[in-house]
Image 1: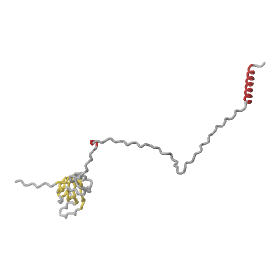
Image 2: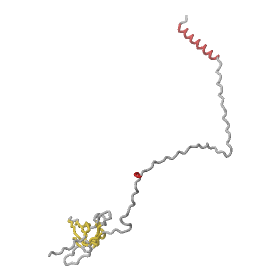
Image 3: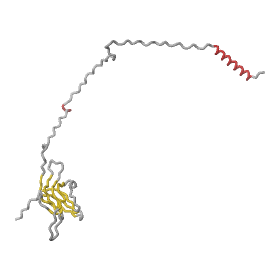
Image 4: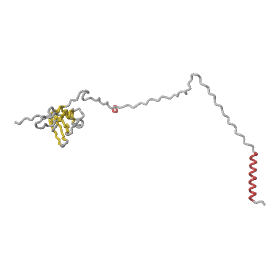
Length: 209
């Protein structure tokens, strides 16, 4: 007697063999029919002298846009041409004074003294002799209000009693500027000096009667 599992396996094998035989008996499928391809149309060459470019496109020209009228209030008047207060090339004339106010400093003792030096008249401060040649104030049309003095400073110690005076040695010569003391300063180991201002000499006072 044959068991049920054996019969089931035999039945499955018979079915598989029958399917394989049926598939082998069928003829192979026919290949797909080729798709017909149309030939490209033959181009006719253009006649001689004809342009190969595309014909121009007629684009209409837009009409100009009219600007709105401008009123007289919107029109600004032209600025007036600058007028020089003084023609170019004319030298600036500065006012000249006859007294220079100078301040001197003894760097050893820290003693300072402000004094007046008349133009053309030597004046002594310790071992320095100041001689002012000119003293000017800037003109009104100049940008900076300044005082300028041209002077010489000689170093000449006082002579000892009974001895002839020593020859002076020049320590400074040139212009001093009151607004810029460091622009052209006195270079001395012991003393320093700078210009304060220029002024007119005071008129003489008449004696009281």
